[in-house]
Length: 491
Image (cartoon, one colour):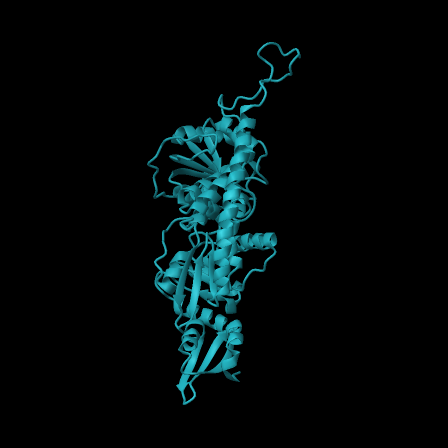
C-alpha cells in the first residue's frame, strides 16, 4: 500500500483533513494494496495489572497484557470496519488488556487455514515480535484448526471474539445463576475447541495392538483429550441441572409478578447503550452504572411510580452485542425471556455510536432468535435513542429519517433531556390498554379506593351520600373484578 493511499484511508476513518486529491484517472487499488494490513490508530485507557498466563484445560483463562487486534474486512465501508475494530478494542480493554496494534485486512472471506492467510500470518509474526505483544485477538469465531495453525505461525497466544466475550461475562457475573450460565457457555465453547496443547494433551500414537507399529507406538487407550471431553460433558450436565432448578424459581417469581396487575416494562438494548442509566433517570432506583461493556449481567427489577401515580416494574436485562456467541444466547435464555414476559419493551440505542442502526439490527436478531426458540411473541416496543447529548447531529438526522417517528423517543439519561417525554409515552401506552370506568365505592370499602390509586390512574374523585365516585382508568382484569361497583362507562 502506498503511503498516500494509507493516509487517505486514515483521514476518512478519523475525520481528519484529507491529503491533496490524486489523479482521478487512477483506478482501484491493485491486488497487493487491497490485501495489505490496515492499521487502526487509537489510544487505550485500561492497562492490564495481572500478567500471569492462565492456560487450563477447563477454560483458557485470559490474563491479557499487550494485545494486537486482527480483523478481516469482507463487506461494508471503511468506516464500518473501523467501528467494528473499535468495538473489539473496547471489549479487549473491558477484559483488562492494553491494545498496542489494531490491524485489518481486505479479503473476500477469511482464510480457512489461518484466518488471515499464511503470508499475512508471517507479516503479523514480525509485528508481534516488534511490539512485544503476547496475545492476538481475532475479530471472529475461529475454528479449532484456525486457532492451532495461527498459534503455530505466530508462536504466541491467539484467542477469538467469542473467547473474549466469554471472559468478560465470567468477570462480571455476580449472582449464582449468572455464574452458572457463564460456566455453561464456557464449557460448551471449550467442548468443541479442546485440542492438544504441547505435551499436556498428547494424543495416542497411531497403529493398533498387533500391528507393525512396534513397541511404544501402540495407543494407550483413552486419550487425554477424550478424558477432558468426558469431564466437560459431566460438568455441563450438572450445570444444566442447576440452571433448570434456578429457572423454576425464576418462573415462580415471574408468574407471581404476572398475576399482579402492575405493568412489566423490560429495558433491552445494546451493551453500554445506557439501559441502567435510563432506569435511574426514570425511577431513581440506584442501579449500577458503569461506562463499560456488559456491566449488567444479572437482571435487575425495580418498582417505580410514574408521574400519574401508576405503579410499574422495570427490568434491566443483559446487553446484546454484534455476533453474540450462540453459547451465551442459549445459557442466558431464561434471563432473556424476561423481555418476552413484559407488557412493554424499551429498546435502548446508543445514539453516540457511529452506526446505531447496526445496533438495532443486532438486538432485533437476538430477540428474533429467542422468539423463534420459545414460540412466544415479542412485546410492543418503544425505541429509545439515548446519549443524544453526545451524538453526531448527522447520525440523529439519519435516525429521524429512517425510524418511525411515532415509535421513537430521543433522550439523554445523563442530562435528563427527553426523559419526561419518554415517561409520558409510557403512560400513554399503558392507558391505551386500560378500561375507562366510573365506580361508586361505599365508604366502608376504603381498601378498594386504595387499590384504584395503586393499580389505576384516578382521573377524578368525588364524595356523595352513597360513597366515593371515582373516575378511573384500570387494567381490564381489575375492571372486571370490580364490576359490582360500576356506575357508568366513559368513552
